[in-house]
Image (tube, rainbow over all chains, first blue to last red; front, side, top):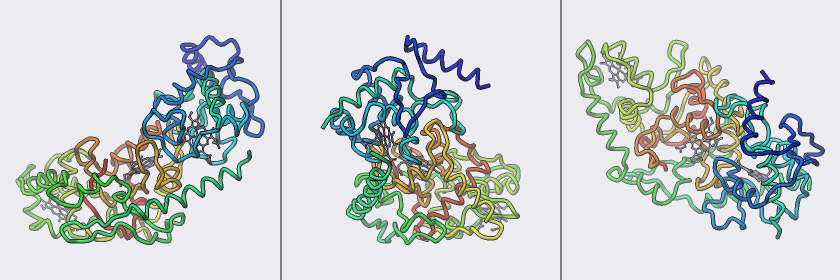
Length: 150
Length: 278
């Protein structure tokens, strides 16, 4: 069962990326909530990351966060803190940890884990066994967050 | 930066949202009658101090639509409910009115639903369909279809202004416990429980939406989004799909239990049927 799920998600990731060294969601290792190693083995693209951040079917981060850098996009939520200056407050590894699985940093948080493919209940069938973001998208979002300086 | 400062920040936000809400709150007065939109939380809603109607969280424009029955688009469907109430249907050649002379006799009923009848938890929709199938020899209506929501709106309207007051003890207790468990269970790819949004974050904006407590005192609700009346179970389904969860079925044991639990969390809030939401 687990094997097929992993195989499916590798195919899924394969569509959008050609990274040599992808760490599957289940294999990511955390230290105090942070993830030291890039999950693609490479750096991310901040510009693509901004698009993923804004996309309602991908990051949809504005649902819960204000971000002045995206002032041109409508409707910023305030369930979470403003992300202005997030790149000053957190290291790259900490941000990677927060995007991958924020529950490792903030216990019981409402913020979804964007790079897990198991451990949630009753997913709609089309999302079962998948992570919200691909490895490449995680790295792109992390690269973008690092540009958010006060 | 560790866990504590952020948690403190989150608590600060909730306090701030209370203030924002208090400033915004207006009075819901319909046809000269004041409808209660806040009440002290019942003891069994242990994480709330006060309960608030979803009406308080909507924009001024949306709120206004509920102030006058002529402006309230839900009343088109209430009128259809009146026609259905008087329409003969089924093998027995009877209308609802044949046995229930005056629909006003249903005053107070909405406040007590869902309720346990002969050991089973029964919703308003099930009561209506029981009369249709067992007493009229008619086909059951679709759980959230236009005929059903028109009828439940008509019946609910008879209790408008009366406080919600469902029974949760005795043989209702196991259903209530089950509903409570569902309320706090995270589901879907986004891994969220009803409580994450409607208990921990009401008063906060999620995108363009001001999160309410997810109360059900206004159901069925006319939504501007789909321009029709929406049943409680259809709303639950929508919220589950939004977190990318496979919803339970309308009329399922799970949604009935959740409805009982939510009704009890709104104890003291007045019935607003048919309410208007976005």
